[in-house]
Image (cartoon, helix red, strand yellow):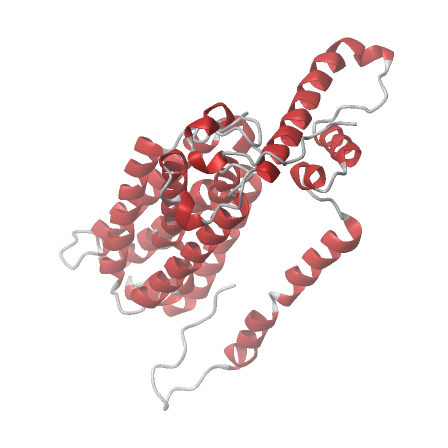
Length: 343
């Protein structure tokens, strides 16, 4: 929900629309927060299967997995043959969750400072920290926050600035809805690669169009900037925006998942703060060049180090496979730890 920039000095005044619209912007987040609260407390009070297993509610975890994958609890004659294979896979997944939780309980508490020093966990942790930082350092929040100012600097007429920002936000929402349908089919790595590359490409075009020595006519610089910003924000939504936290939740073993994701969250918000503050002091050309370069570096990093996790068990990531836990001294179980059982 964009709005016009604040007055440049005390002599300028806000128009009637902006006098009340900024209050709408401040109060609007209350609505989705209340909706989320209602959904989680009353309408869809469902915990993930791994959490239910941790709490010993294995039957509920089984019911949840069956509903999630569309398997009927009671077999019918028409789907008996295909159901058997799907049930076997789900029961294997449930047993792996129970075994992973038993191993986690048997393992002494692992701190992030210990995990980062362990060769087995270090790669997954550093990759996660880098992705959490890249999600914000690519600059999408700065582009959205200062889009009106940037569009004016690009030469877009003032009466078209708010419409352009609103259009960019609307396209972003449409892309978010579409990408939810394909994230499990296309895979995490493919979306991250495509998204970061298109972000870099969009910023490269914008950098060329708004450069002081650009040969692009001034009347076209504004529309080109709007198109590039929209492409960049949409590419972020399809790649880093949609995949980052899903990917992070899949690459960490249960023993460190909570603390690792918390650390990634701190890094993510610190990066967001840094980007929004720094972009305020940059020109449009400098902003496009900076965030285009970061997106390109991110693309190369994803190409070199991100591995696909689509279809992998919840607690058996290719980066931290359970079969290789014995190579880590941190996963040595205590002798008195209880074992996992499935009812």
